[in-house]
Amino acid sequence: MAASSTPSGIDRAFLAQVPIFAGLPERILGRVMEVARAVSLRDGQVLVGEGELARGMFVVRAGELEICKRGRTGAEFCVATLKVGDCVGEMSLVDIQPRSATVRARGAARVYAFDQAEVAKLYVTDLEAYALLVHNIAREISRRLRSADQLLVDVGLAVDTTWTASPDPGGRREP
Image 1 (cartoon, rainbow, N blue to C red):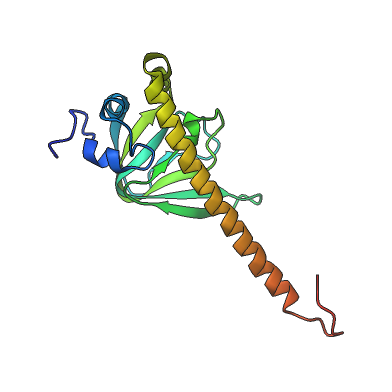
Image 2: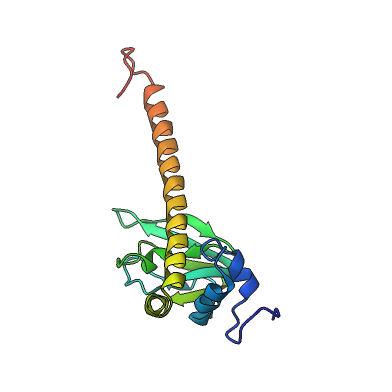
């Protein structure tokens, strides 16, 4: 294990490179590490299920995770693959909503888990640490929202182009 790892197996240097922890002062990063734990997953093992009560967030340390969501018909669609350094479940540290998707391991994986209740204790014991962490989480959520907005526009334009590029037999364009 790396010299910067804690007894719980959390690699400090790695964690400092994760976007929601990057730039945090050493003291605050240390406080965050105190509440982390390492979790190993088997191939196909579900980390969290869509609709479950959210109780924390995770950072991918090794392997990959897939994010899957159910549509109105009940069909599951995988919307993203997370790799080393990506985080999932960070919204649970900000809102109090059920999980928005199912997260499962694609092959063996290892994650760092951050329990919502433990992170919330930072609010009482170290308000600065809590505020900086939540600020970084808000940045990450904002980045993902901007990306989702662009994806929606791109899909909308593709659909619009498909509809308007196919004239009907009477020479009119379909709506």
